[in-house]
Amino acid sequence: MLRLDGKKTLLGVLAPEILVFFHIPKTGGTTMHTILQRVHAGAHFNVDFGEEAPDSALWFYSTERVLRKYDRLSPLERSRIRCVSGDHVNYSVSNIFDRPSKFLTIVRRPVDRTISNFFYSKTQWHLPCHQRIKDLTLEQYMDEGISPDLDNQQVRMLSGCAELDPAWGADGRALPTPPVERRHLEQAKKNIEGKFVVAASLAQFDQLVWFLKRLYNVPAYRTLFHAVNESKGSSQGHTITEPTRRRLEMMNEYDAELYEWVEARFAQQIETLQPSFSQEVKYFNVVNRPYQFIRRSRFLAPAFATARQVKNIWTTAPR
Image 1 (spheres, rainbow, N blue to C red):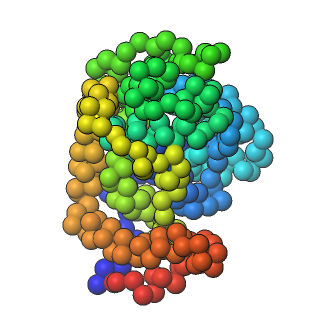
Image 2: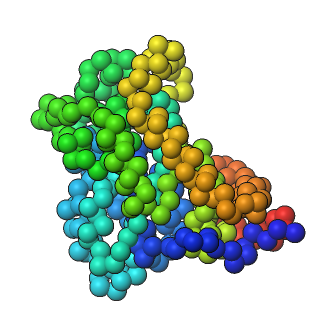
């Protein structure tokens, strides 16, 4: 029978000294953040800025802000850091640390991501653009051109090209930015190849979680998860017309290419671990489903406040 907590690792893949989560908005990042906090309990640096406004129109928080948080840590706390996650940070954050780091990211199908991000943004009063967008429809927001988040945001962020990441103007609009070009897409791919230990799609989330379990050889109960932050600003109840979807597809053609490339790349990355890897993910999902049910229940969740408190689930898991 299959053992979920065997000592299997990842052949040819070494855990970085510091793992930095490159969090792209509305890609399952808040859920991943909670998982990383448990996987790296006692060694996690939280860069959550709460309701402070981001520094750029792509929602990046400046490395200077992260550094101020880092400077408040004691030397012992700094030496223990193995993982950094929370809000949206850029590549230069790696310069803060005295040890080498690698990144992790998740991408999402661009039309779904942009729709989700728009409705979520309407609920975020601390965004500089909030007053401009809070009463707009999606179509009006597309026409207004207030922010570049509808235009290949994933390539913009992952390319690391500063010219694609404008600051906010005083009027709540992003400052002008040049269009995304193929060279930016290729730069994003190059960055993933060189700077990332792993990148996966939101559709591959379960496999990515298990990849991290294997990479860090942690007990499987610490990777149990339920979706976080998925309902805020939901597009549920809003009809997105086919013309609008087609328009978003055209606006995000490079993001679509990047998504397909990342998904294929991760599938290839885990191919060498088959068939055992997929079997383990299957059984992990069998156990994770009741955990998700418990966490979603308003009656049961208080009795199971942490993943550790459902550790006994593993004693009845398929083996």
